[in-house]
Image 1 (spheres, rainbow, N blue to C red):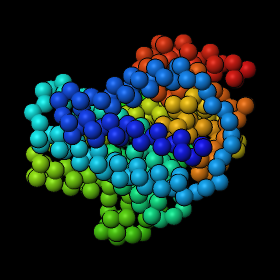
Image 2 (cartoon, rainbow, N blue to C red; image 1 turned 180 degrees about the vertical axis):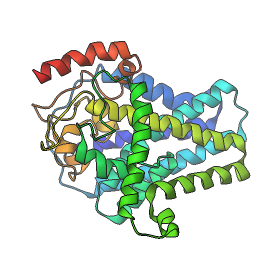
Image 3 (cartoon, rainbow, N blue to C red; image 1 turned 90 degrees about the vertical axis):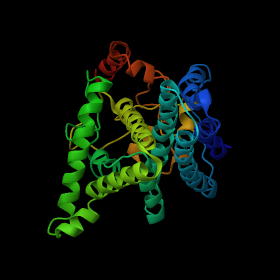
Length: 334
């Protein structure tokens, strides 16, 4: 039944769509569900360390594409709410937050799985999801830089020991954009300007996003355009929060092979099945090509004291985060 448990990952998008289409305070449904109910349940529901994997590939792949459809519907519902309802500032903010939480906690998670696949349609679907979240660097940086240099100073997506999530977000976003652009420039060295603009993922994505903003502003108005931009901001903060907790303080030498001890993992049920086993991150870095429904838990991997949902409250309060995580890192490094 492992494959079918991943269907739970669709629930946040369902709450976003329903809330935005109903309007009013219902636009907060996913915020309450994802940051409230799921965070509470994560501390109550026991872990699931089982490593049994279903052999079927059809349902896991179909679920990924269903997420693409759901994300597009979430975007539609966002614009529908802006155009059809008079929301007060608090409702407008909650609508953006609810939508952004799903974009960062679902769409980018699914995009992460899709861009790791070799099939060009999988990768294109992943790029589409990243576009809806306004991300211009993850496709290049994650595949070319992060997986190669994780745990070293050369990886901007590895959080340093003693670095807060806020400082990490500012540093890593800037560095990932720069290194992604540089990687693409190196790949396209010798191409003419026109080819460089169209084939460089960072510049092409930037131009597409600017075009999308202009089109939204022209056809739907400034509030719809800003709603999309702000939900993108929320989504990318969640992306980098995830990067933050996945590798915080864990290091390796540049000539050392990446293995199961270089990423934090969690077997919390909520994190496992709502995030399609992204929380089994140690195995993902050990075997990057392994599909999500076959990832396993390693007894020797560093374990987060909570799940991905509940740990955000620790990360948002740096002294609490350091008090919880730093002793664990020191014990690992002994």
